[in-house]
Length: 327
Ligand SMILES: [Zn+2]
Image (cartoon, rainbow, N blue to C red):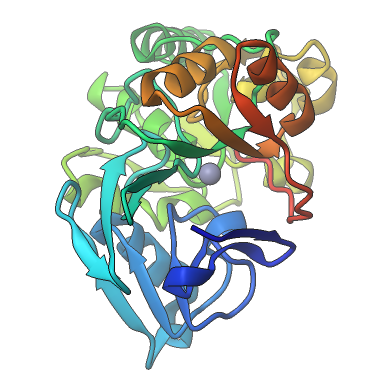
């Protein structure tokens, strides 16, 4: 099977199918709704129903005329003589790995993926493959993340403690994925929550998918709420957070780095991610059984070398792509 790694995305020429392309294409697989994977509108899109629901919120009227094909998990469909199947990836809601079976070859494209069960969404299914295309956002041995149980405990304890002190707990969390997970665990614990509009717009899709968030409010941005505030990091600099009236936590895979405090101004670092940590990534690669591996995002060169030492035929194809802090 011809797999082309380009600046526009990954192209499966035999199927005329792009994987997470960055610009408009005739036919695309969208693994999940983060902007660096779902930032463009295409003529024909294959994705899970949950991903399409999030994609519609992002692109609205621009999708008019596009053929959006909702793909159920675990049910195969045919395309140009290949058999394709989506499996859960436990990244943001709806995230899916794509298995392509073609002339006896099993090719697996993980998209962004984690192995530990997420706070919201389906657990990952490991899939056997001959050839693997895997991400490596956190493909260095320094990255280890909390389990969902540990993360839940840390998030709720941090928020309760700040509220008891009479301060506003501010949880910096990526607007799609972590923000909804943080809102969900706080709502479930009975902690009042206000959510920045950029993240709030996705909450109904999560609730619809079985992760309810009773009692949350959308933050109007004018004054600190009498509740925990869920704020995407990209708005941190533009929002007034008086030091003596807030406590700030950063919920992200990047919170595992020493410089996270200085970079975000957070006093509490909660290293919980919707990506696999290093050991999880290795485990995932081994579980697929694939001998041939292409590493496509993050610490690609280093992770490919580590896989090579473990006996894989591993490569880090050159492929410039937009970076987004979505760890
Ligand atoms: Zn992602």
